[in-house]
Structures are given as C-alpha cells and as structure tokens.
Length: 238
Image 1 (tube, one colour):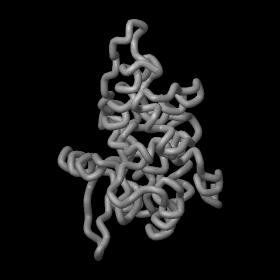
Image 2 (tube, one colour):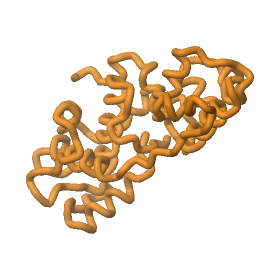
Image 3 (tube, helix red, strand yellow):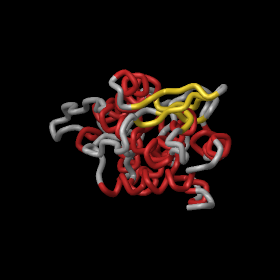
C-alpha cells in the first residue's frame, strides 16, 4: 500500500477524532494490525478497505486516492441543519402527552436515530460526532444546536424541578433535510420511548457496546453498533 493511502487513512481517522484502537475494534481487527495498515506496512483487504470507508465516513475514492497517488482526501464537515431537524422531529414524536421532553431523553432519541440508521444502512443519519458522556452518548454539537433552536424561537426551554424540558413552538417540525424513510425511523423510535422515564433510555444506551467499550470523553465510532445484538440495538418494545 502506498504511503499516500496510509496517510489518507490516518488523516480521516484523526479528522473524526477516533483513536487507532477504536477504529481497529470497529472494523474487527487487532490494534497492531490496524497500525500496520495505517503506517503502510500491511496491505488492506477489500473488505477491510470497505469497512474503513464506512467507519471513517469517507468515500473509497477519497480513502484510496486518485490513480496517480495524489491525495484527494478532504474532511467532510457535516451540516447542522439536518441534525437540528432530527432534534425537532424527535421532540415531535418522542415527547410526552404534554408535548415536553427532557433534555437528556431527547439527546438519547437523536443518538438512537443516528446509530440505528447506521446499523441498518452502514451510514449515520446526521454524521455528527458523538462522545461518551456520563449521561450517555451525546453529539458534540447537541448543546449548541439546542441553544440556536431556542434563540430562533423554534423550541421552548422550561425548568421542571431538576430537569430541563423542551417543547416545539409550533405543532409541526421541519423535514426538508430528512427523507421519508429517515422520518419513519425517528417516528418509530419516538413511539417506542414515548411516556417512558429518562432513566430507562439512559440505562438502555449505557448497556450498548458503543458506550460500554469507549472511555469517558472519547469519540464513539458509529461502526461499533454493528457488532451489537439486534435486541440491544432496538430494545424489547420495537
């Protein structure tokens, strides 16, 4: 494998904030084997290249480079517009009968939308970076996205005892960035967890491999969810 290809792999991994160990686990090889691939000491198999492309969320052309060896790798900056619409529709479909949902539960519904979509389609719904935080996997942009949605009047924030609650300012959420199939998944996830306590969904996501296997504060590779058993991906009430 040429040095440029191994450099593309290293750049893609670092751009996503993943460690070598995380990527190795996500594609099902040992860390020493992955290091040899990233440093150009070992050739990738086709299946390994496809797995890397999926985990690092980069096209095969960008991963392997152009025919003359020149790097065509460029980091893909995910738009927050679609992520915000996922948040809004998670509120719409996952809030309780009073139209409100806790900040923590909302974060978990959005996480499940991204990671279940990846489990089914080998690509995330939003492409945002998630980290292992004390209350579960949370996207880096989650808190900023909520602030911006509140500032533009799209959502309403309320304090209810120790909990922060959110609701929509209008009855219907925007869907222009979301496909019909993606919307159906968001609706399904909302219906499964609607009316359940926040602790239940926190405990559920804490039992999943992506949260279990990562260290506190680490980026959670999407690919880890593909190694989970279906019942631990969807839950008993799916």
